Length: 292
Image 1: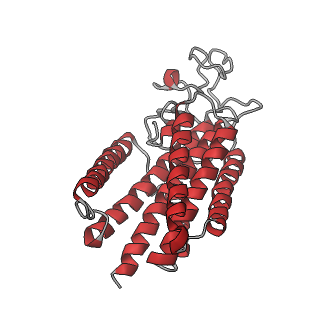
Image 2 (image 1 turned 90 degrees about the vertical axis):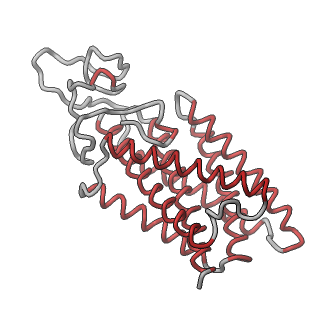
Image 3 (image 1 turned 180 degrees about the vertical axis):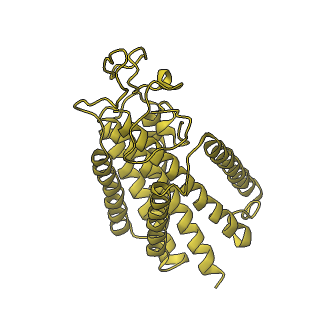
């Protein structure tokens, strides 16, 4: 199963038929997909991390040093998200959003957002994780979020930022609980549905932006009023689905003994998904406050 998150698109820790596994579940090696899993224990797989398995011996997860653990993922994610938060705080306090400097703040936000986008693409297509590149992405993403959040909080919807942060945390906790209790099952059908919905959503947003650029106004009206609220909810739900896909990939990486450096990629993917959810939450809170 491959995640919709581009950081996982070149990997795929497992392709098991059950579609999901518990955080404490042991991987099923030797199945129909073992040969396609880069971290499977099948000795005949093209896996540089596989261990030899004697004929007739029970298949077990590889016990080796340097393998990714859940603690590694949590620690790297905390560092990456912490960098985003520090960048956002610095931008909030160092870049005033008063009318005299608003243009400068917008320019910095756009520049930081473009740099973060490019760094994210570069890391997504690299074969190995680059902690420096990931942290640089997080820092520039933080600057972008800090300026946008400051402008929204100052001029559009006071109090929207803490509500969006709490909403993002609630979505993360809710999806994690639902995933661990098997209320969410990440199957191939689930993956296909999420990908189709995400592609449709992004195409609609692109068309809306192009119409707004060339025709003025809010384009097709997909980001304002009642339609804006509806599409904001859809965006948050899609972000929640991406989280479930990311949890599946992290779980499989731990179960199949992925190398420890993969934890940086897991942190990178989770950070991108949480940024997505926060931005959709911020827009949704802004629209809901405007309707009061």
